[in-house]
Amino acid sequence: MKFINIGFGNMVSAGRIVAIASPDSSPIKRLIAEAKEDGSVIDVSCGRRTRSVIITDSDHVILSAIQAETITNRLADDSEDEENEEDE
Image 1 (cartoon, rainbow, N blue to C red):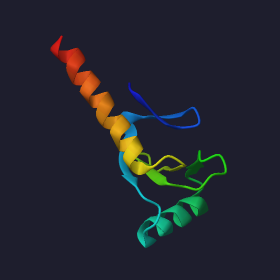
Image 2: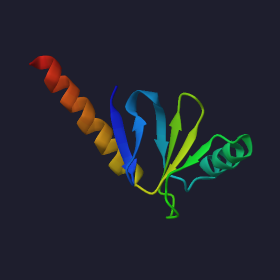
Image 3: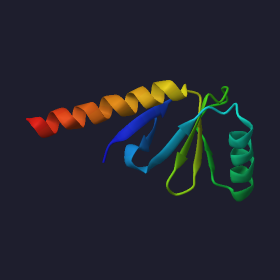
Image 4: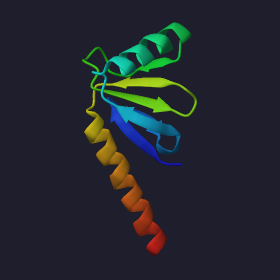
């Protein structure tokens, strides 16, 4: 099981991530509002501005202060590491 650092020492399982989005669009804002009502929001931004929204396969919505692009790059780096380990 691989974990991805999503900021401030918080990790999420790479296999559970369905989508990573920017919080600026209206549909994502509605998704966050609905998840807050349901109690399925996990805010790991530590009081900072939310810069990415991670949606998991368990319908949890994770708010992070790390850019979506940065998290995506970390996911890509991890998948490259896995491929290199399989080749060896």
